[in-house]
Image 1 (cartoon, rainbow, N blue to C red):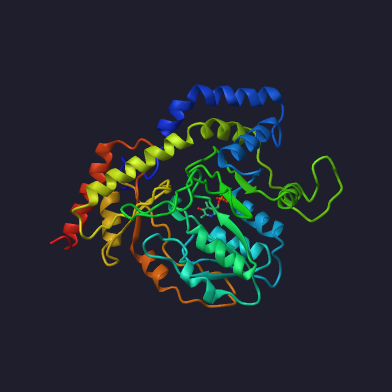
Image 2 (cartoon, rainbow, N blue to C red):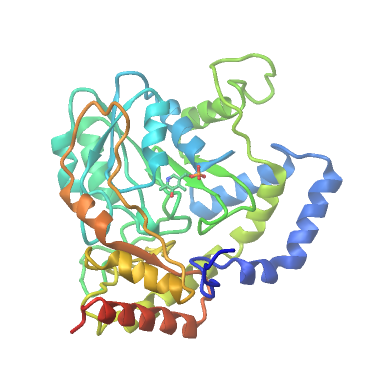
Length: 389
Ligand SMILES: *Cc1c(COP(=O)(O)O)cnc(C)c1O
């Protein structure tokens, strides 16, 4: 017997989405079953072309996972043994893992506390003669400052592979609220401008499949060709058993592609609902001194809504919320490190952020009374912990 409370407000609730799509999901499953194609068939092909069109990119290649998209992306960019790849100190482990799988060494740079993303001012000092690529991560769905990163990459002749696992449908260079800009704002979706971008369709991602899946996008036909080889044991399509490189089995399956095609037609609407939920949280948290809402950027799609709490009470607040039936999660409890790290880096902003962040429930269409309850419970927990005096 356990004394776990009943979770009434989960971190993510997919039930509404599944209900909305129920008949179409069933129709899609039956279509795949009847076709007799289960891996890399007509659904994958149709999804690849629809998603490329949606993102505004020439090539979109379906893979097994976001981790594979990062690893295969790096290998297709020619990253190998002895190379260094610069990335953020504050991300999911897979970002670093992919660099190691490609044979290279990750070099972690600190983040900007306002955006939780890689601080472009910290990149230049991390560059050495071995640096070959930069992996910006659009953490929580908030686009990293791609213009600054691209201009540094240009200056030092580095490749850019974006980790957009949490940012499907996000728009680059969103204007911070309240700041005026003299430049025209051209909307461009994440995944359409760097040499390569990796997406994940893990079920909890904002565009999630009902199993594993990933995607690599690029505008470069040579990179696209390499990705096609790597995903299928080094074979080029239509050249069976002629293995050009040692590759992987990293193919997207037909059921997942059929589901993703359905969800792709809703994703802009769902991302807007996430933005609305984020705006509500921001209003509700306004009067609260000790729970800080993240800064808003227009292009953000709020895969997560992560607040900052005083580090000494974060655990108490999370436990109190859990006891009241509200799920939260810490993304991520520590800055990234890997075994045998060749270069130690000093990342105090990331280290401190890891001690303060707490992601609270968000999904498209989260009821407003649930949001009120989440924030009221956070305030109560803060008072009980001696804050908000
Ligand atoms: C989820 C995630 C990945 C890995 O994607 P999988 O599909 O789970 O392999 C990589 N990077 C980030 C930032 C992620 O959130």
